Length: 97
Image 1 (cartoon, rainbow, N blue to C red):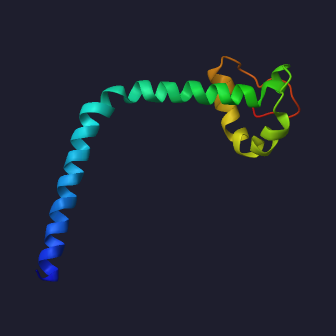
Image 2 (cartoon, rainbow, N blue to C red; image 1 turned 90 degrees about the vertical axis):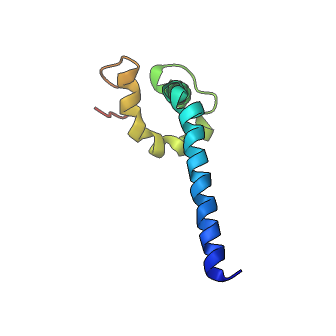
């Protein structure tokens, strides 16, 4: 086989694989996408609650380990406390609103 035929065969195989992946996602992933996203939000909210529990007045046993994550999580903190039903951020040394 020449190099041109090999490329053509590989392009055809890749196109069929893409089509199969789209069919798979359409049948198995798409109907559950909202449920998957809702579960992701619940897990993220639980993680943020455990990370910022000292701001809410509960002792945080893993504060030393989550301290390095604060700069990354502080951007998500505002969205989290609004979604949790707190219009203002809890008192804890910093303000996001």
